[in-house]
Image (cartoon, rainbow, N blue to C red; front, side, top):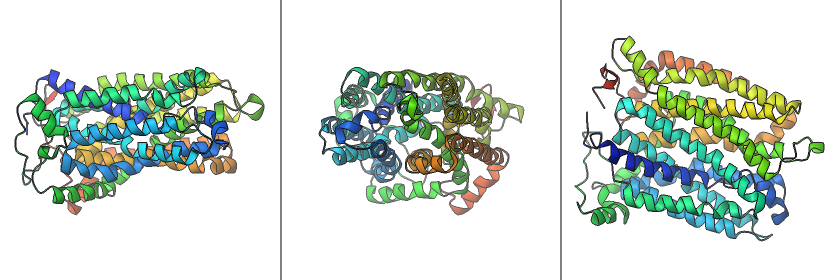
Length: 484
């Protein structure tokens, strides 16, 4: 079924999409601004590296929990308004963190990271809704590749830029500089983002048309945004609060989520703990890296992310559509997952090299190679899995993103609390080696989904026929779909 939104001029689609990408990037990089520089805060708070690592964990905890709390507000004030006011809250939290430079400010600082995390994941979650509303089936693979890679790039890139800044400035500057991109995102969202919501479910009402004047439409969309939503907002808010849990525990999401939990959790663990391996002095088993050297080292992850972006742009749509044409021209959602085969091979290799490099204190370029492979593989897999699950729950793309976000971040969050004990129990090399074997295990799960995912989705439909809606059966011709 085609919609007016999907028939918008491409320039208009890209204007909205670019603004949402900037919002997702700025919001996602803010909670972990001190990811590479938390060691610099140890003297300020007279604390320990483990305690400061907990401030990073607080941001991760917010990433997991925030969408479950705030995404239901979309039913009341609309998707665009939730993005805008989340950015405003993040802006305030960054100022809060930057002011916490006294020895007694550790608790307040950690709370600022938690609250920033609660709002930091919201624009990234809501971006999937814009993609599904505006782009056709044959365009979504590229859109998800751009969006999800940019979101993960924010996780790594924010820390990298913080490392450069902290080399010649006090550590609090890693929060102050973010006010620029967050402020720019606030302005850009207000100027360019349109309300794209419409009911894919024919049994549910659509809202009344918004005002035609530019300023009147801005006010209706953002201040506070209630006119973007149809009547019966309370009932809809409750429904939106329940659906993420239904999707989270549906059979197909449990299987795909387990793959994401491990395949994305281990790279997040690698990024979150990187400073604990590279910054300690050589005589203590580290590499004696400064903040500047840490920042340069993470550029290997940048290269991996950019390479994944290029690969995804060219192949995330092309390979599934090619499979569909070769198998009779009928679309099946599992064709999306063909693009997980390459990362399923690369990720365990990268983790094994990383573990061996740390265990035997090999040259840091060995670790750099491992970092490239880890992030290249992870960022090949992430957009594909997001795209797949969202297309398994076509009427609820945002709620599906809430679920996948929880799977994506949870392992990284847990690892912050268990990494010390895990490493002490088996050693550094085997800890990361076990991670490589975990990837091989979830690779088997992914193989099962590729082969039998259509049957697993039927189990979801038997539980709730209203959320398990897909585009299976759409006809593919000349590189495009006859169905959106």
